[in-house]
Amino acid sequence: MTISRKSRDDIKYMKMAGNIVALCHKKMKEIVEPGILTIELDNECNKIIKEHKAIPTFLGYNGFPFSICVSINDEVVHGFPSKTRKLNEGDIVSIDIGATYHGFVGDSAWTYPVGNVSDDCKILLETTEKALFAGIAQMKEDNTLDDVGRAIENVAKSKNLGIVRNYGGHGVGRKMHEDPFVYNYSTGNKIKLKKGMTIAIEPMLNLGCDDVFTKDDNWTVATIDAKPSAHFEHTVCVTDGEPILLTRFDESLI
Image 1 (cartoon, rainbow, N blue to C red):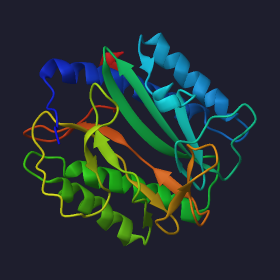
Image 2: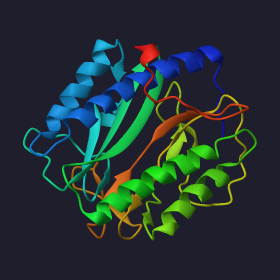
Image 3: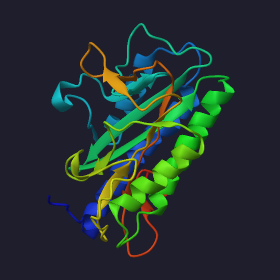
Image 4: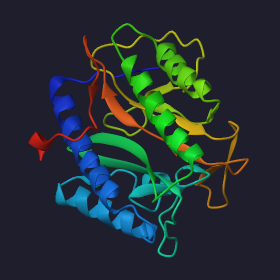
């Protein structure tokens, strides 16, 4: 396994890519509402990414036909935007966005409530976001990947949520998926984090069981018990101090 460590210049470009992704999420927060067509979300992100001289990372990736992933309710990841499918009151929608700028990738996902959602879904969203930041807090030099996974797992277990085990976090850089793979639970992985590593931390938690399946489109992953799932993700850089969120909005980078 080769885990790359990024230079200062690399990190600069990754911050730019991440900020473009953050701009997309800022727009998603504004326009996600009952009645919007999911293809409109894709169109808006595609527009923002291209306006900022970047490339939609997902478009064409292993044949994926859209610029973003839109996964609703029991759909976990890799859902297709649609010209006919609308968001409805009470839905939750996970939007995963990638942008490539000067050859470097920013990758971030967020799950949004659509109008008023159930108390169970509120807990799911709050807990999955909390799990993300618990994992990020462990992204310090000489901590291990197991420290990250255990922190996420502990938060999930505190609310008896299912943990998607087939998918997880990953290195990010010149490619969207680089080493290492990051499990969202404890596996005993003793690989140490080092300054300059850039990794996407992305817990996917379910209101029901852990198990998922892939739908007939060969992309969309959904929970096997049809219960809602949430997905939160940031691209993070390890430093010799506090980790840096590369996909957090920074107005100074516009």
